Image (cartoon, rainbow, N blue to C red; front, side, top):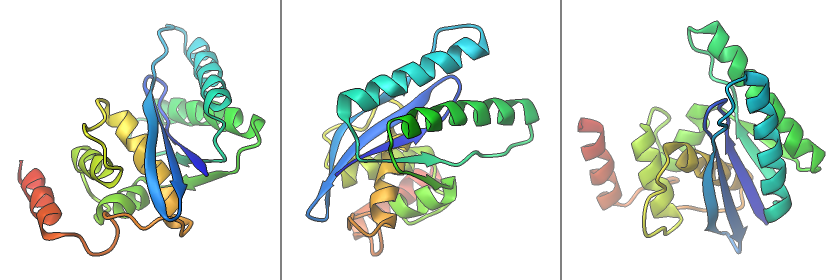
Length: 179
């Protein structure tokens, strides 16, 4: 099974593909969709087209997307909601089942801490997937975290970041929090 994780944004949408089989997760690809268009509506079209292209190229079996975070800026929240909507439409037009996860649930699933920083999430994603290097973009590592969260929440994969952590991982996470 191949899962597409999506971290929505109107300026840099992260995507990540994780394959799972025999209760193990394997990194496939990740990156960002970064529209260059100035007009917001044109950015939405670009995001929809790129998501459609990625889905066609990788043919994922399931999709997972982060829910909208509501901050103090109503305009930014509305734009994020519209960007999220166009990404969901691209996934549904490809007949993908879509799961929705809160930022806290994603962080807790991957790091064991619902208040983890983006850098802690990035570290655990790379470690869990056995990546030689961390993803360059925090948006891409967040998208991989969303895909991992989905595999864990659906009971398919047991990853190191879930449950009891090894002491060396705990020490690294503690040092990252102090920075």
